[in-house]
Image (cartoon, rainbow, N blue to C red):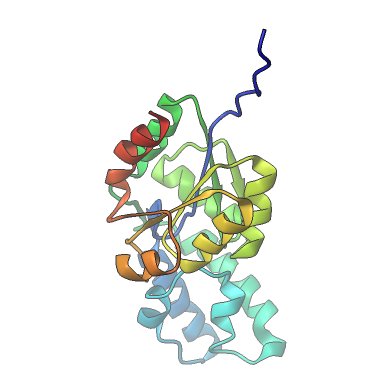
Length: 208
């Protein structure tokens, strides 16, 4: 009898901000509160136009290096209290998770966001996942995805494509974040979708 390689269960990773959830209202609110508390001018509209990296990277645009960790801790505390309201699941988010489950798969979220706050967002949006990893970005995401055995990673940022590449996973990009479809394709995404509503069909084609 011919030996067969074991079948690896399907594991699909998703980014969070602007992939599964539109978190811009809460993030903008918290940056405005932070600006008022610290007396530092912060362009919160600019901030929410380039979400993706951990908050420390964004804060480095507005605060001196020696203040960043303290300010980041304060931002995260503000977010826990004020950042969840107004954030909503993006079109197709619930259906994308359900599609993975229909194919017998696991859903994990790998995000640059502080993990406890990411959990608050997921719970508020009623998006059930099997695993959550926070405060990782770019190549760091790849290490987590590889450890989880993910074969697909879905995100809206060029750093998400990098993470998928490091993990040896298919990079599925959604044009719902800071980058247009053409930019995501040029960065090497294996598939570019206008939004998550197209993901169930893409996954069905992949599995067939």
